[in-house]
Image (cartoon, rainbow, N blue to C red; front, side, top):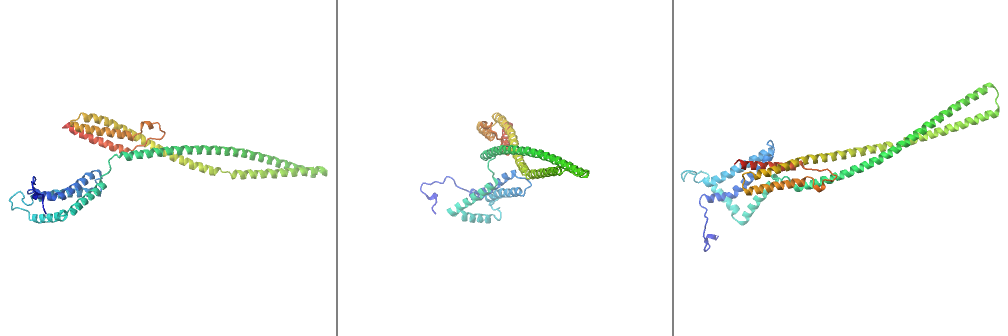
Length: 372
């Protein structure tokens, strides 16, 4: 194959002498191991030290770093190890032969080189996707969740108002039923008194008839009159008893128990909605307090950055970062034009605390620069 060195007018400006050629030959294998090892070691800081996955990440990361450095050192010093030229490791020639074979297989063609690069890229993307989390706080997700929480609070308020209206209607209906029931009970008591009075009159008439029979013969007309009076009283008693039975049936067939059960269910739903509403309000108030604390820390942090010993470019970058965090935290809290809304303010306390951690990191950076 014709190389560039055979082209007319081409001059080689950079030449890979020993041991640069061997070092460059192992770079395609060293760099991926370094990236993987560093990624795992950086990510394991956020895991629980007692977790098995975290310990496995530490082990794999350390192995990748040690293997990459040993591979680089062995390729550079394996043939002349800080001594005479003939003092080499016995396995160095086998190592060089294996390295040459792997290099020929992978980089011997354009397709193999592209395949190797694509494979390394895909593996690293898979690893990074599984260990690297999205930026915290995720302000887009926070705004969406805040919007959903406000809509949910508004829906809960409407449902509470609706339930209160239904409760009021049912309460009025029950009051009317209770009034009607009281009137029926009064009528029933009055009918019972009338029945008792009629029975007493009947008993008196029977006593009079008995006394008249004992006293002697009685006028037939007077006896007939007494019998008719007794018959009328019996009819009146029968009619009053039927009315009493009818009133009892109407009282027993009333829908009060069903209405009471329905009111009980509505009251339970109302209490549940009120509890959820109070929970949202409590979360909102707690997050607002944390947000106010973070905003005050941001103002103090800007002053510390300006008085630190950092260079002007770093000061400008850090100040812009802190101001951006302040604006983002302000957008998370309740907007001014929405302060009069009826719904509660719902915040994500974890996201605000993440901003607080970022602020602490910038503070440590500025204190380190000031101490220098």
